[in-house]
Image 1 (tube, rainbow, N blue to C red):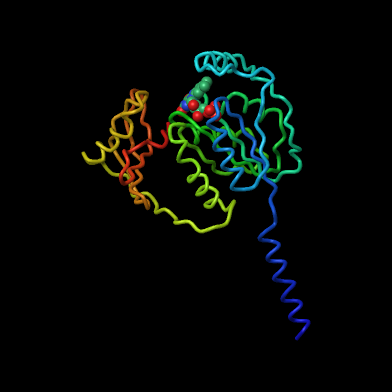
Image 2 (cartoon, rainbow, N blue to C red):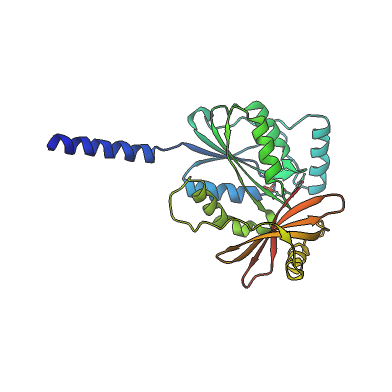
Length: 262
Ligand SMILES: Cc1cc2nc3c(=O)[nH]c(=O)nc-3n(C[C@H](O)[C@H](O)[C@H](O)COP(=O)(O)O)c2cc1C
């Protein structure tokens, strides 16, 4: 009997150890104007992970116009900015969250240098980003294409204008992904896509009205209830293309778009 109990205890401990095996996690991010840093710190705090900001030998000057000009030139000339050496010993980490602002529809230029010069093979990589209107999907695909020898998981992205919502969204993202333990209410799947009603078109128009760069007309929509209201995916016709725009309509708040998928 005693032997059986010892065996049972050993088994239980093995299971417990298996479940709690600590994955060593690093949050590595580039942030030019501080927005991505907010998300990086939220991830770091939830996970108790290590964190490091990527620094450049010759930093951008912080002015939007000149960063656009310099960034475009670097892309055209395939001459991406040199980084200061990463301080963390990458070999010590199983999981690396890589964060960046979206530039020109994909990850910011310093991340091109990072992915070209640092070895992430064998690691789990989780991209995260901040953006004016969108780019999580395209940048995540680009990270995946670059890091063929890493396990690149679905990432998290938030509009800079909604950075105040990031703390709560990051928590949910980490719970859903199993990075932290805890209870959360699973969201329903989106409905089938259907023609948008007049009322839904009005919600769409209100959500994008504050963002002059979106001049799109909603045609179809899918939706789902969420605890605070309704979430929509609108299909809309831009000047030249069809875009999908996610919209949150929460009780007591003006509708807002959360991302544009191109
Ligand atoms: C050079 C440059 C290009 C940008 N391109 C895009 C873009 O293509 N799409 C987008 O949604 N936002 C774009 N943005 C906006 C940034 O992604 C957004 O402001 C981001 O939150 C900045 O993050 P940071 O404060 O961490 O640098 C761009 C910003 C800059 C400076």
